[in-house]
Length: 167
Image (cartoon, rainbow, N blue to C red; front, side, top):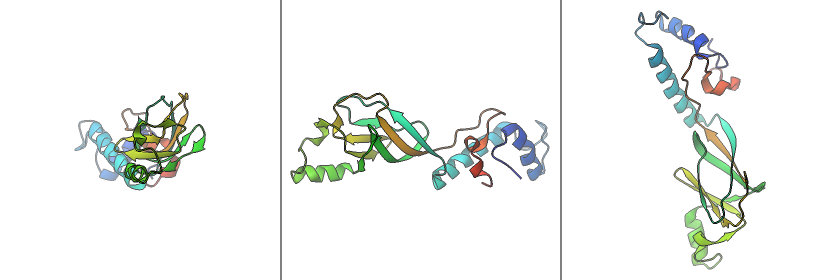
């Protein structure tokens, strides 16, 4: 049985055995690189469809800066903390609507203060209001990520997470 805690080097012969092919380079229909590419594609698909790999990351807030780029390999963010306090999720459309109703400043995108809400758009997330203080690692994101691509024989699929055995 394939075990994702094993390295590519130890899994490759098992894959060739299942394919009923020779594990010797040049004697198989599949090259070692082709198998690695296929494994990377499958890991990305499984990661995206199942949201199976969670990660926490930090970023430093910048005064008067609302938007920040998603962390590396991030599929989606599901929770944001600012200075260790949970922020409420909101959409920019909701903020626009609140501004039209006079519940927040009409120019909310230019409002500074202590963030209380967050939104996401494309590969960025935003804070409302914009931080009025620079905090080193003051933003914490909880997010799902893609598995790290396999590139060397010592790499382990799905970042070596044993709960992924069986995929």
